[in-house]
Length: 151
Image (tube, rainbow, N blue to C red; front, side, top):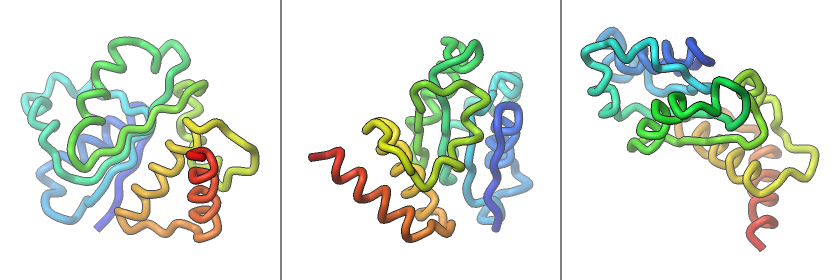
């Protein structure tokens, strides 16, 4: 079984892979979608059915830049991020290009805001849930920072 990932057009393609009959069952078990662009797929007759997909997925998106801050973009991602087995994470102060750098921000060396900590914790939990290795020190650091923010 494999995990599919992609950014922008590649994120849309990764989401299409999760839906493809070629990968039914457990062959493609999860997806990491970095600010995916799904507009190219809306012509597909099965696009509305995609929202019923039960495979694990995480959508990492942002709030800055001419692409990711548009209503058109939000309208595509919000319904999908609310699906079962889907984690939706939105980073403040990042633009479309920055989203691919999110995994490089672990471990956290500075004192980011609570919004960032909570979102990175969601990413860590998702990766653990789909069976990916998460460095124990990084996981502990995130758990501690999340606990400190909650105080």
